[in-house]
Image (cartoon, rainbow, N blue to C red; front, side):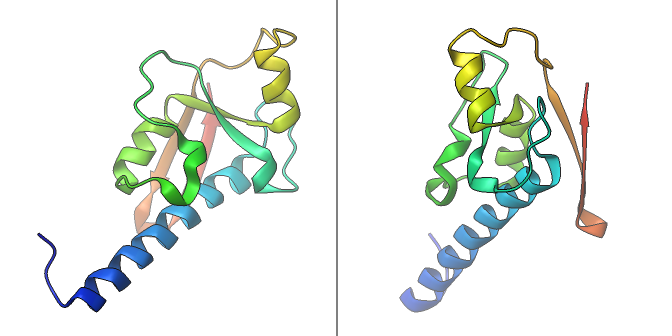
Length: 117
């Protein structure tokens, strides 16, 4: 059970929600589309799972009630693609794309290093 007053708990939940959203958006902005390089709008960038062991959907954004560590693990099963490339993948028009996006996090410097294998 969370500690503190109801208001303190509510404020902490709100901070966590903002932190998760900010983290996900920063990864998308830093990476851009793995296929065409698009980076203009993070809202037009999606996580596409390339492994079959999907635990949860990262596109929920603010509705994801998972820890940052859980989000990082789920991201490691995905590539980031723009909306157009994502639609073409699901339509079967793009069949050759990277298997996994390796995301290395350096929390001590708050820097993300995204390296596609």
